[in-house]
Length: 161
Image 1 (tube, helix red, strand yellow):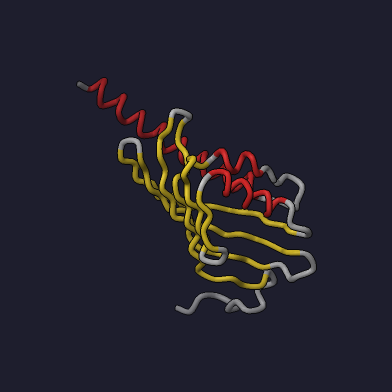
Image 2 (tube, rainbow, N blue to C red):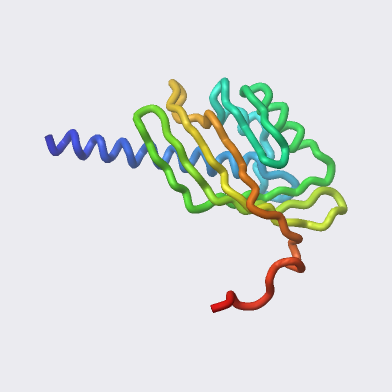
């Protein structure tokens, strides 16, 4: 009885680590324009299930792995684009072969000669376990705010008490 409980708990830990690694891989492979960026559209597409949905409040929706590959290729080949994703504070709920999660996203970006900016929001996820392991079945980026990189439109100083 105790052995099965330990095995079950270990399986949950392994599933959680696999899902966290999946999201970290997305952040790495979608980054472009700087030394150390993953910049690999094919790897991005492989993180998603065949019928996955990728949604962005700012860019609309893309459905299916081949459409996600085309979307990622568009990002990787955009002239003058620099993007660096930081995804943090994962919240994951696993239910058998499906899971949901939320990450807080902070994205530094610049397109060509435009001023660099921060894009901040939440990445809401659904995951599915496949024969090849966990895959993203739905990713929705919900923008909280955008601000200039230099902070010129951020409130200066300490938080009010």
